[in-house]
Length: 214
Image 1 (cartoon, rainbow, N blue to C red):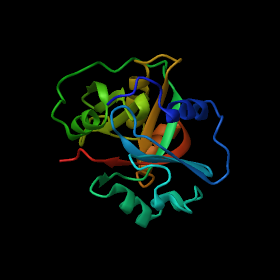
Image 2: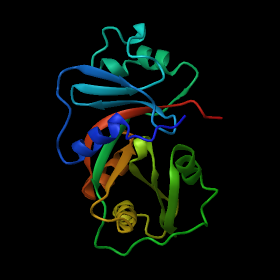
Image 3: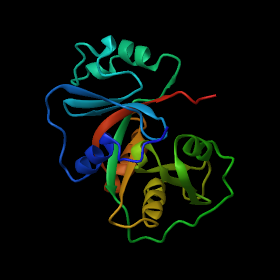
């Protein structure tokens, strides 16, 4: 059953977007999944949130701390059970809007793996793009706006700066009163550099636990 109230993590993410973070106290807050049933582990500096159907008093959480302990492999595997464990991504954020030409909406790439993935994890997904690549924008974890980008192989502008141009073109479709979040695998250095160059700031990390994966 969906809840009509805001998820506890939603306000925490909004506060972090403006530089106000949870206390650095080692505490792990165990909270319910979001309204779409998404389970996740979300880390900030010295404080973490576990979105799960398990109760906070579950023995699994006994002695678990937020200084890296909440993402220890044995704990993540136990917490996931039969769920698919997502990548351990850096979470970045900035306000929407930019001074470049907005990317056009398109339905040409509906069968692209990036679009299918976006629609699996998000709702109300918009797909934007051109011959260089595509951007997806949708509502993800706890209803936040999430942006992802994909460069096409062999794109004519497939050199340094193309990823940044696509990201900024996607941001241009949003307004500066909207916070936009991106999840990037730390090992994907090219993508991480592109988002940082576009003004995104790292605020934490997360792992999604997907119980609807085929």
